[in-house]
Length: 492
Image 1: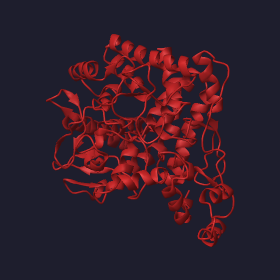
Image 2: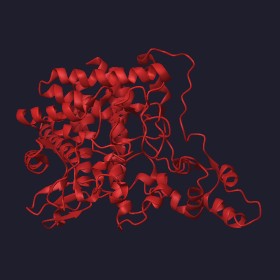
Image 3: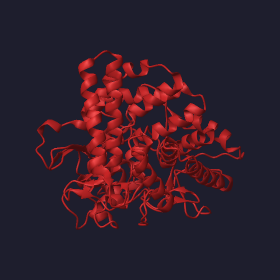
Image 4: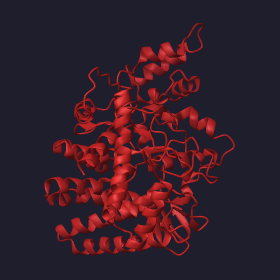
């Protein structure tokens, strides 16, 4: 796992390829597998690149394998949607018992999202597991958990996805929730004791550097407020253009601050790449300031991780650890109320670490305290009202109230938040609203499937006749978390 990033080994060639835009999607080059030793490719490139008639694309195609760079699902028979998904589970199953190019090896088979995403993704996998549970594919659920554990034990965390250029960031920490899902499936508490060490190691990753913090300061993923309270933020260890969006980042970086690339990458750790949620002016990516923000979703998920660690410690009779994590979870619960509940709008919002107040962005991550049972009934009622008035459309729940052209903004509806919304409302007795969320989004998925034969990465919640857009790449079909959430919602 300490393997050098081979992209850095071919940096000159990689830079030339990405700047020349020889592929429509810059992820193609990051996923390519070198067919010869990298040193030989570099030497050959240095020798030939200045010669007359040299064709860069021909050179790349002769030296790299692109066979697995994209998944295309072609099917003539238009099956009922549930049968289509059952076939997709098999078509989206991959193994990586050896490293290939940037692809990390993993001990077990896994499900990829689909389209341009042909690797294991962290938070996608939780929502995929929801559907695997409905499909009775318990072994694949266990595989996903085992792969996450392997990565946490060997890398120290679950990377954004299973490629070497993602070894600088994670994604929303869903491992403890994956264990809950397996427990719900198997009803065996051993799942918590089996992975206790893994839970601890992931927690250490998110809390790294905490002990060195002064008030009103940050280190990596931890922030200490001016009052001395601990919160967490998304972060990336590198401050350079993302290889998978190389030229886009370079072009966007003009007239921006020195940590622009890290702010971009840190937003990727959240899974929300990109959204007005991160922009200082609420409109333009050049004003991105992810590093200044402590997020309600991340802190809610870390509360769940602390609570799960208290539970696994109790099962192992580790009384001191049980007390420690119980106290940390209780304290975090207080902090979520103090820092993320906005009295003015009566909703949850992110917290600006420099301005010492809530950010103005209205977004669907406000669901997390309800999804995890952290809100009181009055807060839940206010959030439910907010969701009904500002986020629920005929095609499902949108992620923000702003339309910027970014894919995690209006008008797009993403699968994870339909499940979070449904479950959040069920938790507090808003059954009618839960059903409306479910029906609106599932109806949208069914309409698009009926028209196209595809299950999409995201959907247009406002215009259900249109396929969703926005962002750095076209809408993808496959699609792991859509399949999972659709099956789970239809079961409820």
